[in-house]
Amino acid sequence: MAAPTQNPERLLTPGEVATLFRVDPKTVTRWASAGRIGSIRTPGGHRRFRESEVRGLLADLTSEASNGLR
Image (cartoon, rainbow, N blue to C red; front, side, top):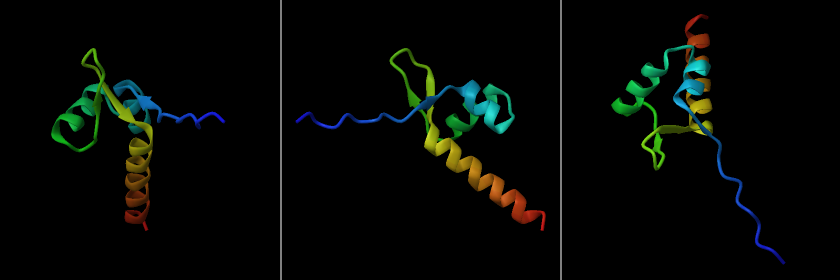
């Protein structure tokens, strides 16, 4: 019986994260440098972001914004 294959988490580029948050990609890079969002470095030195973390942060910010509008 074969071992189950791990489903690696999708990693997003700064541009993809920027599109989700509607900000410039350089803003995403600044957030990562400041520790506001976790990032992974590729062997080539590029930043990548875990999709689950990005979507969780987006959901938190969205719920905070909608709660503030009530």
